[in-house]
Image (cartoon, rainbow, N blue to C red):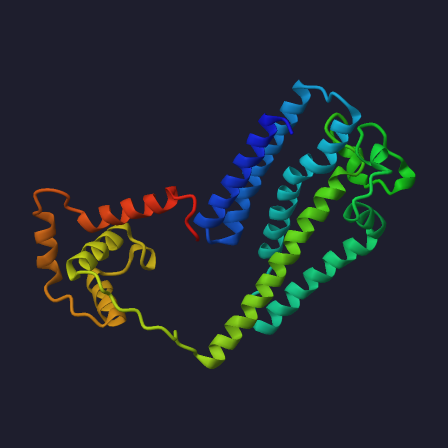
Length: 282
């Protein structure tokens, strides 16, 4: 693979992973992911137009293996966006029926494209010269009408179908995970199961107070609406600890001559060290 394309794909993957971690709302997540994926695919198109494939095999490899990785991400996030936008407001039975219907739609695609799906999944190559070379489409080989609206210098008759297969694999996984979460939530609500392990704060009280003030300042609880007193009482309840005169302790922390955020600085250092250790088991 062209080193520039490798970098482009790596950067796209990293950006999408970051979005997945940073944005919880599935609709906003998809909007941002679609924007990034489209931009990345456009950069890929520019790269290809500036260079020529050296062999037919290289061109086939690109349209069969490389380009679909970019296109599939657009298809995936656009489909999830539409699924979440149309999701009905209702109870567990309504949601399960909705997600199951979406799974049925996926099955319909595989049924309609069964011949090509088998060809691709079994690793066949005897029709690659028709499927994955530009300008070699054969209407008798079930060409998707989408192809006639595309840029012929950057498309073949079947590279979109490969992208659709890759995307549908991820969409199926997403839908199955949603159904699993619904079942787990249902089971959890019925059993009201509590954690089996009790967590005890074994650090110093001053360290916990320093962390508590930092979290309150960042506004990570209740969208920043949580009161410091409420947060303190919650920490005391969860860890069964008495933080006493926590406001006075904060004044003492603030009065430190050096390293006012001693505990948070230590957390930052040990976490960075863990990230730098490539042998660390996550």
